Image 1: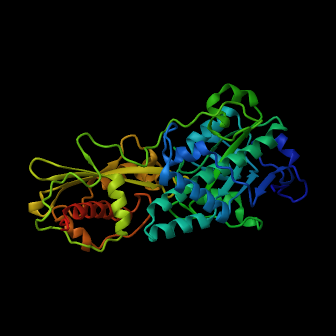
Image 2 (image 1 turned 180 degrees about the horizontal axis):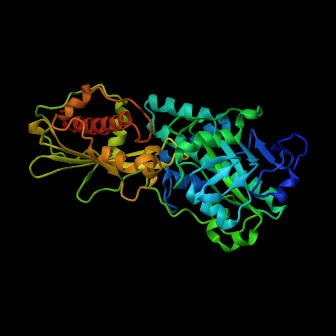
Length: 456
């Protein structure tokens, strides 16, 4: 059940909010809402969107099982919550956003608030709970990347559902006071430095709420822990006609909450379409690990039964689903491997990178001739990584120029001591090195499997 009170602890409805102004407000006029155990309703279309499935895609088999499993696991173990409170003062002077005396350099947020004539703001925090993140981490360490991915994505879907639930409750409260609620905006969004998460968290004041199942902390980088959490600012305006006229300011267009009686505009599915979990075959490529043309009984330049950092069964499945190889006329091998991950902030946005690897011929020991890594064409998720937001050019340059084991035989990956960060993003060098190791191990496993002598 949602707890509703003003900051003074007396009134249960915060009626004074109808007289909101740009200046400080009395404590008795400020609304606080909290739900320490909300019923989470993740809409199926939103879950599918975050998974990267096209609208018309028919889901069957293991993917369908994993999607249902993630829902079931969270229903039994998740601890969601949300909290909102009305800020005591809002100023937009000088193009800066100042909330209760704390100034933020967020020009796009300031423009939106000014355009709508916002007179107050709601500070909101939501969380899917740390259990989801912790279990996903254990799944990765146990060599279960598919389960990890589906639970990670479901955790992000829960956060979006909680934001929608909080927005609905705010709309319900505002509608009776001739106010309109603007779309939420968060540190890490365009033109708002993610490093401001800590200061916004201080303003939200979660530490005063003993009824919430857990809190949130902001790291110096701006990342939140647990990472399936969100801090946001919702503007409030008495100029309802402006919101109705300026469709870009209507939060309903970005809200998928079904059956909302406060809807002012139809929901528009986000234009960004994430890539499918499964890669599209390259022209002329042979799916999976086939097509290398290796002789069955010849000497193998790869360690048989190698000890990889990931379970061989996982590597073989990835080789079948995410690896494309072809053998060229000169005996060299070209391969592409797709990695799907998530950002460590901004709701864990899905992202996809493509690794391209060229090897010399088998007779030359599968020497690594060329390497490259770049976002899959059309992917936008990488732009939500915190390091990209801090200095996107530097991050992408680092990703493009890192070529580990270049010039070495592919077999060198077996004994390669490298970073072990299992984070789904590319912000840290150790995380990028870890992913290069995965790509090379998948290729090694696939080639070793094809080169193995045929029994009998």
